[in-house]
Structure formats: structure tokens, C-alpha cells
Amino acid sequence: MPDEMDRYLFDLNGYLVLRKAIDAEHLRALNEGIDALLPLEVGEWNGYVHGHNYGDDDGFNLQQIYEGGEPFERLIDHPAWIEHARHFVGGEGTFDWHHGPLFIDENFATLRGPGEAIGLHSGGHTGTKRTQYLFYNGEFHCGQIDILMALTDIGPGDGSTMVIPGSHKANLEHPEFELHKMKGEQDSVDDVTGAIEVHLEAGDVLLFVDAISHGSARRSNPGLRRTIVYRYGPSWGNFRHGYQPSPALLERLTPERRQIVQPQKLIPRVPQRQV
Image 1 (cartoon, one colour):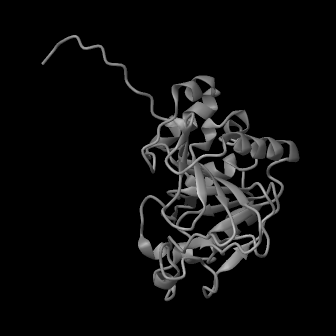
Image 2: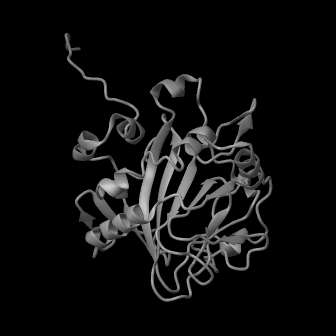
Image 3: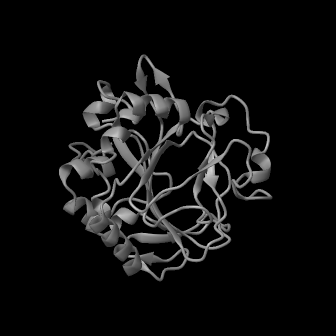
């Protein structure tokens, strides 16, 4: 559960860094799990894990990474961040709470190499309901909380995630937004006024509300930047893309994890009458 300083800094800046959230053994298992899924091309499937990108020099994504094995399943309700996600998404004491307030609408690993980056996107000025930031009656009600996990050290030259602190509450579009947006002329957050690089060690986690303006620096170092992102929202949400959890995954998950992956149960239909 976030303490009062976490709450204050999250409200102020729109993000938190959770140091050493994932232990060394788990990190090794996650990296080995990714290795076992490769090589994979965009559009190809390995089981229920899908090769994907956004059509630009933004790296390669392994969508539905929680299908990749037990180490990835463990991330669904990881104790280092699950109560933070629950607190900032909100909904406790409301109808949502009775269905479990959380739902993962997207989960993926990203591999990003030299020359690759993702451009600036989001911001409070957009007013997007899905990713909104709201604090009301003493409680947080955020549409989407992103948990970005560093599987490798991410420092200068490594293509760090970049954020503009406080931009989750911005009323105006950043004057440099168009130049640096995804698929824009610059297509990275390098040199954006007010943006900062968030450097992480392997095992650290960056938690942020998706309404914050964010993207990445362009990687200049050799090798690959490896991250995993799980996006948590309220239980009434839907998948960002057209993916669905596999029956095998749902079968082997704990009840607590299954509720986050599929919070709404299908109502069985046995018709007594035919219209």
C-alpha cells in the first residue's frame, strides 16, 4: 500500500519509482522466458504470445506476455506493486470493488535496440477517459496505471523512458508535442523541454498514470533495452487490442490472478424458450 509520501509524490508528479521490486532469481527467469519465445517476427505467434510493433522504429513487442509461463504469471499480482495499482486505480467501496477493481487491458515485453525510440504521447490536455487522472473526495480514480519493469539496467544512452512530471494534470498541449510525438519528425522525447529520463536498474519498476506525457529517449548504446509493461485499469474495461487470455492460462491461474485477467465472468445460457 502506498504511504503518504508515495501518494503526495504520485499526485504531484504522476509517477513513482519502486526500487528492487523484482528479485534477481525472478529477473533471470523472466529474461530466460523471453529468450525462449524468440526469434519471432511481427505478426507471428509463439503459442498465445504475439509479435507486434507500432509500425515505426519503436522496437519489438511480445504481446500477451503473461501467456509466456509462470514467471510472467507471477507479475499479475506481484506484491511490490499490486496494492499501489489498486489504490491509484481506485474503486474500493464501489460496485467495481465487488468484481475486483483491477483488470489488465494490455501486457507486453519490449525489446528496443540502437536507434530505436518511441515518441511523446498522452498528457492531461487530451482528456482521454481511458487513461485519465482524477483525484476526488480524497481518493484516486485513475483510468490506467502502467507498471514498467526494467529487465536490464537502463541508464544514459540506453533509451530510457522519459516523462514530463506533472503533465498528467496539464491543461495545454506541450508546444513541442507535434515535433516529438509518435511518428512525428523527431519521434523521441530527446530534448523536449521539461522532460526527464527515468534511469532504472534491472529489477526496478516505474509506476505511472498513463495520462502523463511520456515516451523514450533514442537508444544509442549497443544491445537491447528489455522491459515489461502491465497496464491496470478498472474491472469494467476491455482489452486495448483484440487479444483474449487463453483457456489454458485461465485454468492454471490462481483465483486472485484470474479475477484480474478476466474480471467479468460469462453468464451461461440455457434457453427455456426460443423467440
